[in-house]
Image (tube, rainbow, N blue to C red):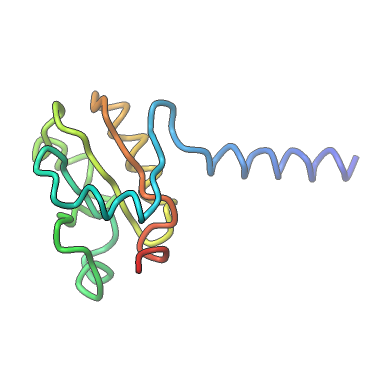
Length: 116
């Protein structure tokens, strides 16, 4: 019985870490090649304090908690690249964007922790 519970917990955690359907995950190396592309929107969903401490200048700070209220600031016809500290909050943000009608959403794998 203990093994079944353990497997269920592991399966749940793996499921939660998977990107939302239709969201592509990119590396920080891939991101570097996109930063000058004016057809993309870059959104950092960390807190203002995290953003102030260290950020990528092309990214606009819209914290995850307030993202739903600020969706009108983003263009649904443009690709959206989302980043956070580790990739977890940006994965949630990407799922929210997809559910809100954004068709082209990218999540930066590893987030700012992987950025060099």
